[in-house]
Image (cartoon, rainbow, N blue to C red; front, side, top):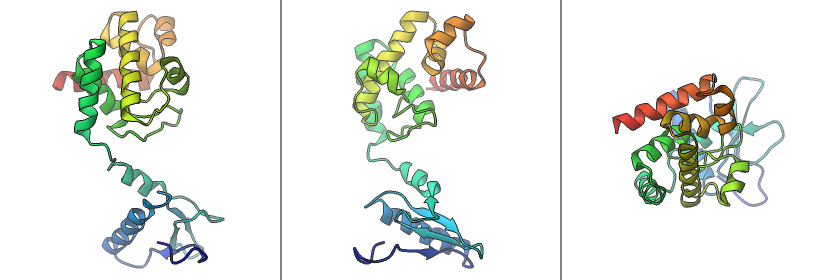
Length: 202
């Protein structure tokens, strides 16, 4: 998307053309951007036209739609992630189907995701927990799964029930102890239900 090192930011106006053409142009921009900063910036001008650039520019903000779309095509294949999950499940005595169900709900098998709360990687481990587990590369599938499976094992040993272990994995063991069971948090209750549902179906 760059014409030369000294050129001005590349701008595209994606309006007043067909929907199919708009999608093609924007997708091409996103693919091109992956080779550099992996982010496209956008703004809507006074005429209501969507303008795009591959460089940080005053008045523009990250065009998250295409960054998130491209994240759905990670370099690490699902089969490779499942192989890592099987290996660490064996080490810590867990069913690999349970671990892959947790990964599916936590990150959708995307190694590079970070939640709005700061949890990172395939098994969405918080920074403080990463430090406790010795995870130094949270977006590396091997390091993340090794830490996540170990932590899930710890929660299962602590609470002896799968539903409580999953609740502790999501909301923290302190909350499970505080409420004497699955905490009354909608997010946690939905999380436990989704993981168990996936686990039982596999």
